[in-house]
Image 1 (cartoon, helix red, strand yellow):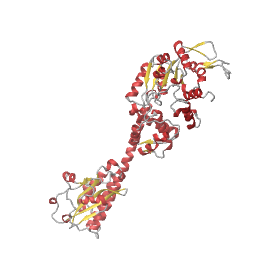
Image 2 (cartoon, one colour):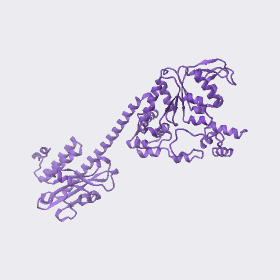
Image 3 (cartoon, one colour):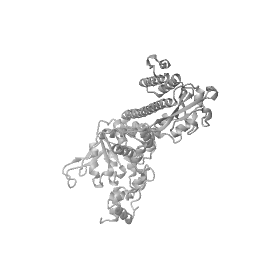
Image 4 (tube, helix red, strand yellow):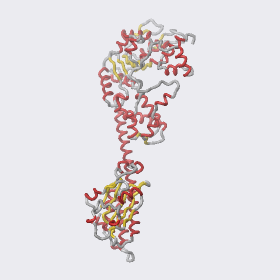
Length: 540
């Protein structure tokens, strides 16, 4: 570039001084360079070179606040940042390395702190001039001036453009100041542009990472997202027993994905082309259990206008998944055990045994061993189910999977709601460190809420924290069960006479006579509460 900086005779006007033509030549060369490259390191070095070669403004340097590139924006800078020489011409590497300044230190630090230009007519007569970078002996013996111009980004000073000037220079000092201010403004604009490009690059890189993870998630085994050791252990156990016919018991807290694991077990088994039937035992009224599971004949009860095959018959040749099996009444537990042992069912109101070939997968978040001890679950059925127990890890046990799960739910909800929401790296960090008592189900609900409520395309950590559920929000409800820590693997249920009539009445009063809410406030299931209520209030 130095060859292009020589003054060209055809650019000179016979009536203007040579230094004016050199100023015009310098500006033309700098703008030509900007048109070729917007990289600050390229433009700044040549700009400082031209200031020295064409105008005699020597030993130019550009001082920038430390870590400006890392923080990206002057709005995120620390309050009193240090600075250092980043670009120079006419300084040795050792001299440039010595050019470090605390906030407000010397002339350079003061310009950074105040944002005001400084003109030192004689560096030997100015006590604030440090002379840190260049020793006075290396400068001309005549009077040397020093000019320092602030470089601004978004209204905040982030750097200084500084030069040495000999007093014998024929150009007016005011002209040099005007030129240096123009170049400092250009420098600030280039830095701002570089910051914007860097920020956009970071966003694109983050989105590329999200897309890569989404593609990895799409290829997840059986639709189960994650690669944490705890999850891979459970998947390995699942695959090792997939070819067997023995019953499988899935153990895990609520929201850990028991239905997904049950489907995965079915898909990995030789029965994958046969039906997969899911039954939520907690949602079936006690009087309808037998009819739902085993079917009924016509006229078996009032309203049975026709025969109906139960869930076991419908799952013939495939897999039946009994979720929340701990909610099954004792009488039905006996009939289920008989079906598992003999491979037949008898419809309600029928006399004929119907053979069924079904593999049973059961799930519970109770400790069935405790239920057996307390007489609420048959021991022989428990031993039959507990042949192959598989523990499903909570989200706290597989934190490595939170990012992949969050991105999977984000992609799904973006498509479902025609949104284009993305999570910043900091937002994913917040999700990864958050306590998830509701496990994967809670994470899924949070992401859905985020997609529906946020007005940002790139969600920040602050926005995530605002939308995360707070423990105080749950405790504010009069009938809410208090949650001080993540839910345990099992729920500890009390004896049938654990709650007095007065306690039940108070719970009903607080819940507005809603049995479900009253049960929740006492830590009971709806069926357990209803049983105690009927026992203590036969007339109700």
